[in-house]
Image 1 (cartoon, rainbow, N blue to C red):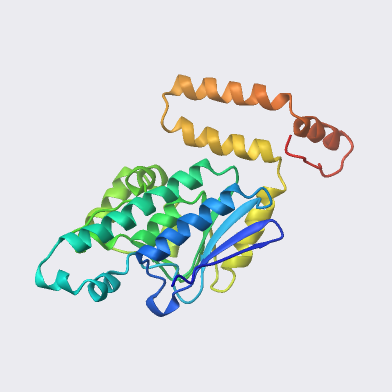
Image 2: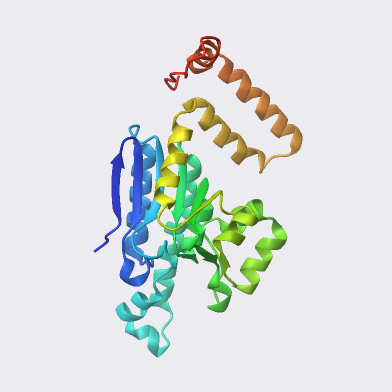
Length: 268
C-alpha cells in the first residue's frame, strides 16, 4: 500500500514521500501513485504551486531494489524477465514526471532534505526550482549498479550544471553535498535543516503573487528556447510579450504602479 501524502493548503499542493523506514525509496506502486497525484495537482485550478517534499531524514534514495528481490525470488536464481518488468514499470513512470512538470501551468518546487539520489535526484532535477536543507546530499549511484539515469536527467542535468559537471556526476557516481549543489547552480536556495519547507513555501508564495499568465509564459519560454536556435528564441520572446500586452493583468500592473499599490492579478 502506498503511503505518499497529498494535501492542498492555501493554494499550494504539498506532495510528500512517506516511506521513511526505507529513506523514501520508490517501489512501482509508489511511483505510479506519485505520477497520479502530480497529474492531479497539475490539473487542479485551486492549486497555484506544487511543492514536493518528504517525511523522515531523506528526500528519496531512488529505486527500492530490496522490494524487487523480496517479491521476485526467482531473480536471485538468475531469471531476468521479472526484474525487467519492474524496471520498465518504474522507468516509464519516472519519465512521466518531467512531462507533467513541464506541462504544468504552475511552478513545481522540490524541497530536499537528506539523500536525494538516483530517482530522488531525478525528481529534484525535473522540478522547476530546488530548495535544499544543509543536510541534502545529491548523486547518481547508477554507474555503481550497472544502470543509467532516466527521468529526463540526461537532458536537464547538463542544462542546469553544465556538461562537464554533469559528466562528472554521472560517470563517477560520487555524491555532492548541498553547499556544492548550491555552488554549481543545482540548488536555488540553501537553508539550515528544519527551515526547508518554510523556505519552499515562501518562494512559492512569492511566485504566486506575480502575474499568473506572465509566470506561465516565462516557464514556457525558458523551456522552449533551450531546444531552439537563437533567432527562434528571439522570435518567441517577441511573440510572448506581444500577447501579454493585451491581458488584463498587464493593465492592472501598470495601474498599480501608477497608483503606488500592490497589483491584484486575475490571471487573464
